[in-house]
Image (tube, rainbow, N blue to C red; front, top):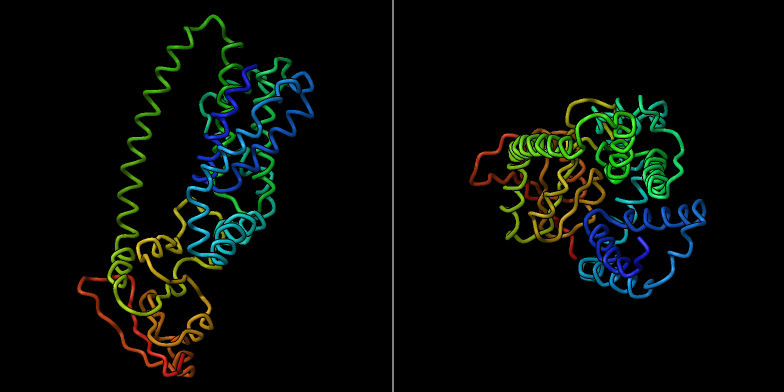
Length: 331
C-alpha cells in the first residue's frame, strides 16, 4: 500500500491470529514475506519501516495468553501445546486425521476448489491459473500457494486448515471471473448475493454444529464438572479414536474430548497408557467409556496396588463410567 504505518496494525492482527490458531500464523507471515521479497523485487523498498514497533506489539498481544499459560503449566505447555499440537501434527502425530500417501497432493487443492464453488468452476474457464503481471495478484498467488504447499506437506490434514488460503484465492477467482465476462452485471450484485448466501450457510451451520456439539459432548462435560471439586487426580482414559480407525470418511470423526480438561479446571490428563495411572499415588479418578474397566485395565490397576470402586454420578450417563481408584502406596 505504500503506507508502512499500517504494518503496526498488521502486527496486532498477526498477534491475534497466533492467539486464535497458534504459532503457525506467525510462521506463515515469515514464509510469505520471504517469498514476496524474493519473487517481487519491485516491492523491496516497501519492506522498510516500523518493524521494531510492530514486533513489540505482536509480542505484547501474544504474551497476553502465552506467558500466563506457560507460568501455570511450564513443561506441559511446551510439550503438549507447542510440540505435540503443532510440530507433532505436522509430522503426522495426530493419527486420527492422517491421510494416505495418495491423498497428500490432491487433498487441499480439492478442498479449495469445493470451498470456492461455483466461482472456481468459472475461474478455471477464465484461465485463472496464468501467472499474473500485476503486483496485487502476484502477491495473492504467493500468499495462497505458500499456505497450500505448507499444509499439503503436513501429514495431518483437516479441511479447515486451508482457510488462510481461501481469502487470497477468493480475490483471484473473482478477478478472473470479472475479466472473463466484463459485460455481465456489476460485481456489487454478485457480492450482495454471495453475502446473503454466506449468511444463510453460516446460520444453518451454526445451528447444526451447536446441536451436534451438545449431543456429543454434554455428558463428558457434565462428568468433568462433577469431578471438579473432588480431591484427587483425574484421568480421561482411552477415550476417542486414539490410534484406531484412521481412514478418511465423510462422517464426523470420533473425538478424544480434549474439552474435558477445560471443564475440569484442575489437574488431569488424557491418556491411553495405564502406566500414567499407576504412577499416581493417593486418590485417582478414572473416566472411561462403558465396559473399558472390565478388560485389562482393572487387572493392571489391581496388580499395581489400586482398589477400585465405581462411582455413580447424580445424573444419567449413557456412555461414560467414573471410577475411584485408591493407591495403597505412600507418596
